[in-house]
Length: 307
Ligand code: CP
Image (cartoon, rainbow, N blue to C red; front, side):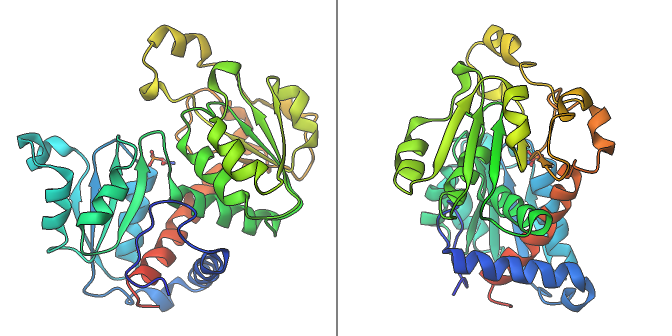
């Protein structure tokens, strides 16, 4: 039962529970009209302490498409946060106004803290460089719809693997599926945190290797998951400037890729995918953003217990 639960970490739900969410997302995709009143009278609060386009707007449109309403802030300085109100007090109060909360915060662990004080379900919409579980639901639904399975895939994760929370969450989630190979493509300064290797890949016997060269890695891949170098997480801007264009996917590099490779990116992108790639039929990152709205519709319907 997902009713009244929070989603803080991608491992909070079992694979069966995730499957239920994906099944509902697919039903909504097939027949959205059927679901347009299931959240009548429900209110989502979006508390965004960090900038967002996709996550906040897809949550908000998801709730509206289910018949519900939305309150919240996208700029914490327009709320009493600017007067020094704590996160704990904010979510306690908002729990009286809304039925469910989606929270983005720059501090790792903030969503967990919020869920301890809120009396309604809290969804982690990104906590610092830590986790982004609804992006993972988005990525998994995209993989399911575009590749048909979560197994027997070689997945390249490219770019900022140190600070990229979407990658951290996706690695955790993929560690539960079998016969996949992960290829970590990053400069040595932006390698994947070791705890993910030790706690999720080694423990589950997941095969992985590291590469610094995207061109070397590309021919083997079924999925290439590109990521942005996370400027906002760097202490040293010179280091960011040195690394920011280390990987740029373009049509030339795609010549050696499989014809059915799927290119994903959580977005926003900066320079890491040349816009010329957008018209390649393997480019699925805008479709991925659309899947994100449907999977958030399914997630909220389940947490609110209306489906
Ligand atoms: N993918 C993602 O989290 O995008 P936003 O930062 O625009 O929400």
